[in-house]
Length: 115
Image 1 (cartoon, rainbow, N blue to C red):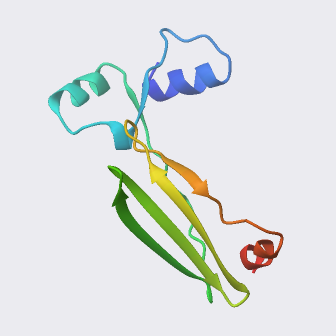
Image 2: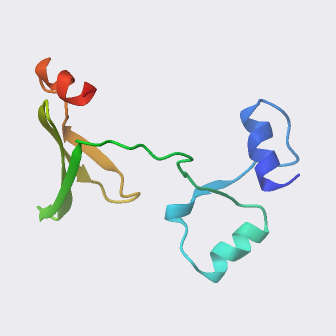
C-alpha cells in the first residue's frame, strides 16, 4: 500500500499493512531525516483550497504584534454593512492560533458577515 492508500483505508475503518503515520507539511522541516521518513512511508498532509472566493466591496486587514513573548494577530473585515474584528494569539509548539476575541460579539455583527 502507498502512504495515501494507508491513510484512506484507516479513515474508512479498513485494515492496513501497518499503521499510517502522517505529518502536516507546515510542520515538516526540509532536511535529510524528513526525506528519509517520507521514503519509509510518512504521509505528508497538505491543506490546499481548490477554489478562490471573490469578495468585492469586502476589505480584509491583518496586523501582528508581540506582547508578553507571544505573537498576536488582529483580523479586520470591512463591508458596506460595517466592520468586525477578531483577535488571536499564537501558541508555542505547533504555532496554532487561539481566538481571544471573536468576530461576532452581538447580533448586529451577523449582518456584517452576511454581506
